[in-house]
Length: 476
Length: 118
Image (tube, chains in turn brown, cyan):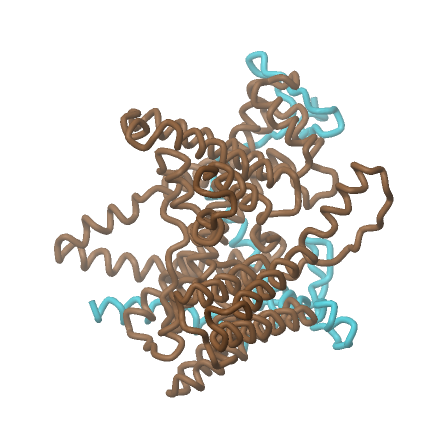
């Protein structure tokens, strides 16, 4: 089940709201959420829901052992077993075939691929439960002795399949004590509608443009024929549209998750903070997929695997893992190391010198690096990736511009301009100015309410065409 | 601010309720969709194989959307909304303009009907 689906919104969510708000006691509310969350996951993964339950149980049990044998070897063994189990599960389902393919290519063997299917959301809920067990071991959070409360944390459907990766400490107290105020309902609903609009009205349309300009892996072997010979203009606009698509798709989903969490009384942290206005790549990764970046920073970067003198090795390890987390493919590893290299260079230059660079130059530098990075992210086939770079320097005999790309861009021109402008903090800036006066506040209130209703109507209309509803981060 | 929250929620809930009423009480669309050259998705038959493969539940969601009441009207509205995304162009093809060269393989190029009318 995906959030941007009529069945999810008007059947599942409606039923969930009725059941949740009909019961007064928090324990029963939690039970309602657990049941609906398991139904949500089992809807798309009727067999793999067992994995989710198993993961919760193993980590719950490990937590109890840690609490019982604190500061002993048994506690260390328990957290080790839990981490190995979590990473092992991720490895088996996500990376086995990748390693088999590479072994076959290197050693000229013919080991058959397992063909094992990736359970939806495994990258997210595995990291989430790992953060819990590590925080238990580090005594940052209390061990949860009630299995069902831990299951609620792991399985909570707003953030189960596509994040944000919520830390246990963020909602630890809210599991037992939360209220949904009128403000939570209103702001949560607004956030959900805005997220849905980002996904349905903007991201889905941008995806079509990307497919036209760069080709699509969903159309078998189509990408090669689109990309080779594509003009410089088509390639550049295509990759810009892809960067915008990923932002609107993923941040839209995060908005929906945060909005739904808010409706149920949970307050998740922000996952995106206008990343395209960053002045350098370090700042970009403090604004983009924040929950993943902070996970690696807190649990990998400062773990003294290499020692304090070899902090740059840790940095590249983190970026290798960041790339690899996104997908079992070499382009994702290259993507992670690509960003790691720029962050490394920025660290060598130093924060003070970076701040002295004129704003225009630093914004152009950031956008160039980010957009080219998303080109690496898009082309999973290394030959296609090579052609992408060749297109950027017209080394493929490609033209500067071609009529097809021009026509494609013109037919989505307003969308592209809107997407480029709206991803900046322009809306919060306008809101801030309006809310400064009472008249402005009243106007903002009316416009927001009417806009939310209109956006919801538009989303419903667009969702009736279910053939165009991809969701990128489901692959992870 | 309390008034705002109420106004906002009422606006959203009105749309929510309207859609639920439409989906619950409206006459579902069935049969052959001429414009898409396919049959509208039917409510699936249950089987354990279909359930455990995920096909059964996926098809329920597909049926819910595909057989929406006033389907043709919604499809027409989608076309109208998509037309607002940019500037309509008539020709997607091989106009050579100002030295621009279309280096795509011949088989990928689409010609408009007018090209054949000379």
